[in-house]
Image (tube, rainbow, N blue to C red):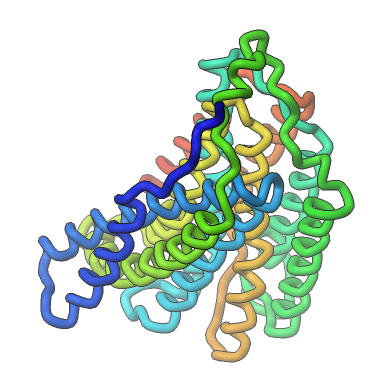
Length: 367
């Protein structure tokens, strides 16, 4: 008999309390209040993970992961634009670049690396559909090159920046590539992104029988409502706490690029947790769908949205990354392409990716 899926009480209570406590900032402030908000920010992110997994399970692959990737992009775009328009202390000209680059590095080396290690420790080897991963990788490589590398070599504007015309053109190309990938993922070649049956000798009929039943429409609709509430309060709380983060970074003398890493980390936390849990349950295909889908959405949707706002608002936006960042990005893309070229993974591939991720974090803190 299959287990039923129920909504857990804390996933409903936490976002509701978070909204109430957030609006208390009109009369309450201080370090203790910021700590409480941070607690509810993390709780809302975890609640978003739970509700998104219910929706994803109801919709099936790859629609569930696509929905989560889109939701995460909404958070990212909202944070970038709101901070760029309202913050004074931050170097907002490079905020979009730092956030998107951080998101790509966190996904390609951090999340994928942890997923491979977690899955390998439990199952030694894991399998996935190679065609889907290859399609995502070639799309990601092209979009990343257009957004983060090419601006360093154009001559119509300052180094690292596009002109308004160039920015709009590149943004539209990237948006079309993302839409094309989405069509391939959901319609034309949907089977490329559906998880294969786990090749595990211990996976028998008994395990199939204990899988939870598909959530009802009512539960899915409730989860959609609370997912929206969770994502909305995460945006508001992260924006409110950004001034505290800025103050800490200035006080510690850390590079401004840390702000981008923090934003990307908060934004990707729901998807990262969901991806790691999927790998732990021997569903690496789902993990990779989540990882690459969020990477493509992060750059293929976020940058066009931010670009349009920057052109309309007439403020500068530097996109070109430095030589050190280009080296790390290129190394990450080469390693992950080689690692995922066989349709199966082992623990060494994950260890190599994690080493690149740790080097990226270290060289950001100690440039």
